[in-house]
Image (cartoon, rainbow, N blue to C red; front, side, top):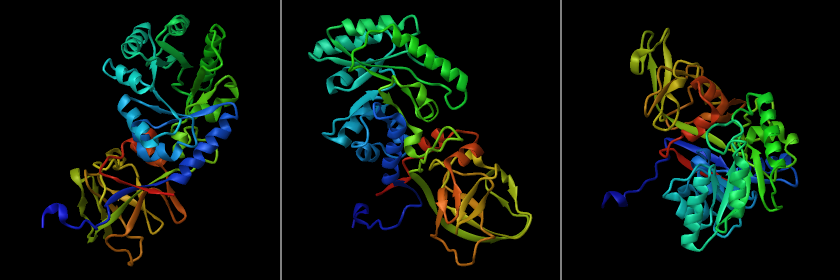
Length: 380
């Protein structure tokens, strides 16, 4: 018998449960916030924020009008997943020269910030006897890409006048809609002024509202024809005071691998940053920063859920394991028992936001940092 023929019945040490019904409901909540005249572009870049691009794209293909991805490889993955579903796919980031011909050939849409980019798309379109589908990006304060206010009308006109391109949309992006209300409102006004000087046809999409924009500023965006929720789709509000009936779609779990009784004075994990001040019962869990559980929560009061109780992390997070205090748990727990790292167990909840705060990070990084070693299990 070869290794490939050996049975593999052992459950995963660390896994993420993705609730597809929550994803769909979050999309419907976002659609209701956007309004009946505004469609949805689901942002599924970075492996759908760690939730799995293919499964998420498939689940949302009947709920949204567009998918937003970061590069052409993600675009092809989304296209393959949704099959014949009529959902547009926009590459949000600037395309490399090698990606542009593939975007054009496949009929994806590209984001452009300059005349030089537009000309490269036009050349690729001429070579293939196709039309390049373009969304012109205005830089209203993000500073990452986009044409500046005075240059944007020229970019739009050039696309409109090109025989090889279609102006499919105009867009901008909020850098701090979750932090700076006044600046965000000024951005919206700048974009309004830009739009007032353009001659756009009714088919040209207008989009700028990310999750924070959709949740906090949608009343200022009656002119938008698309909203671009990312984090909100996955059930997390970037605005702490606005939850909008969102339900987290991901629960991150692990298992107890080892239970030990340790005496007072026992040091735990690398660097010996924790030493027990009393006899303790501890559990070693099969999860570490190799799975995406952030090392920076070490020493910051991080906890996990066992038997619906909060159990403190002891010492540093290592690559494959963490140690927690289970002294308060019953003697019934045993190796193999389930542990919740992010999610709800009983009456207790540990949110992605909580982990991000203790790690000195943001929910986006926590979710996208969950590695490929973590098995994704998709639930209805």
